[in-house]
Length: 376
Image 1 (tube, rainbow, N blue to C red):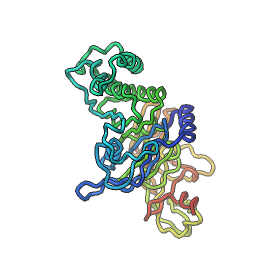
Image 2: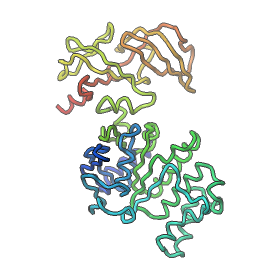
Image 3: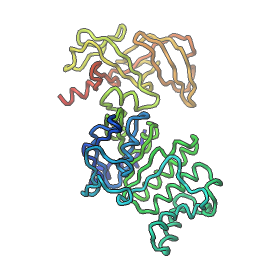
Image 4: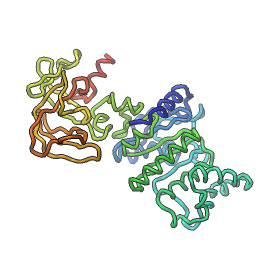
């Protein structure tokens, strides 16, 4: 899910770092239609923050507001204790990297990278050292004389990154920079982005609709939907403690199993099984039960809630199988290691999961009932 010791170091750095960018109740409307609703967010110096959510949730709009490419309808944007809400993009000194690279096809890699320096009338003597440093960092030093048409998609994206780096920006803004790449190139360029961030330690805001990408890259993730921020936190927090039904279903791969179930006598009814509701929520008539596929097993353990099941589909996923089963509470998916005999389509068996791995959400508000208890 995360990057091990690298992530722990990043989190420790974020907790001790000062706030670099602050958004205060930022909203944006287009022709009377709200695209963003009162977004407040703080980003620390050197932090890598990922905005994630489905298409149309407002994440790219938020990035463009930060860049100054769109005007804010209401609210404020602060950078290092200076309000920049109405500053032009040029005066913000942010570097934006787009999904379509935005390279000049008639210029060489060298000239694409140094184009901004020329436009800004920077001293030519300062160009070469910066060019050499960034070309070596991104493994472009042997490609400097080529035109973009002679480069692969991954190489073009690294040129766009190099052009951004030589600006010495205060902030990197990346709008789905990997979406035009195939799976192998996505992995390669993702590694380049993370290596660049580790070396430069420049705050980065990265937009993607791919939650797996977000989980593997971010110090913190901002989950958005419908123009609202749903939850902000470390990848581990969002996976283990989703605040609502949307975050639960969006974060995690494969996605969490979600079933709407009846309640009676302070318990959730799971066929012949019962799961106690939190003490403060025992008056609920219905709840959503969430259980991740990786937390379901067909090798039961003591204390598991057990359900009879029939296999309807089996998918090989490399080292694992994903099995689809029907149960008294509905259709579920679970992960089975590729060892020994794996159930086939039509087989009957029992599946189970620990009550401690269950997530419960209110049927009306869709809020996590356990977190409502914690804040009660």
